[in-house]
Image (cartoon, rainbow, N blue to C red; front, side, top):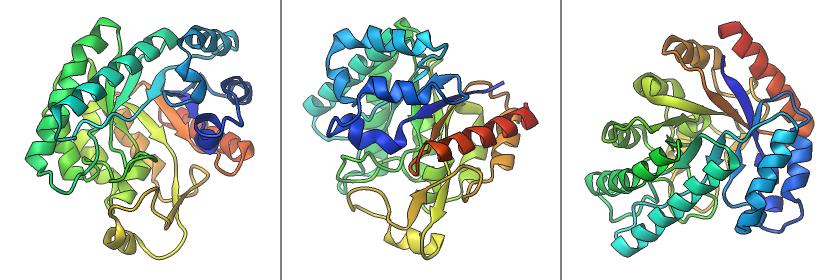
Length: 293
């Protein structure tokens, strides 16, 4: 049966930018939820001190939880080989971080969708960079998970492999026992596409999942398609919200994941309106998991 983790979506600025929340404070909040694990983020300010890594693991495991997944954002589509080499080195450090925290899954991305990059060039740069990290991950028992991502908060351009055809091409170009897909249904809407269409194409490669829900604040999905582009930050038409009440069809998603034998971690990206909302999302997902597994 899949297990649930939670990600501090509502507290990213506090944990990563202004330091108004400590990691220990996030742990104390998250362990009160009816979940099995906490998804980590490589950019927490306190993660700059490697001596703290084992201490955070100890804190989480002291509450009977684990840290299964690491969220990080390598940029592998830069045309400069020296830049990519630095990103590969950073990814290896994040793999070490995951390993020391006791995790099994570490995210990779393609990189930014730079205007001058063709699809073939971008796929090759990203695939070669991911392949360069895979032996390192395998030695440490870590699986690299490629997310169908929208955009890192601190990037100029959206994800190179944001669109379904590019994402599938990249996934199809990488075959390794320590590689799989982290499926995020909500991100597909940000590409103006259908999350079920993507899931049916990659379901046999999915090894972890991000659970969230998105709401259209104004306009239509068609409006979103037209304006999707290079603006910094997230699309303004869509907002995160309580899981089970937005655009995603969790019955269809879980039917397909169950069909392909998925039995891994589902991490919740929610709680932007408070911990009460996150608790309701946990309850919804636990009920759905019990229904389908």
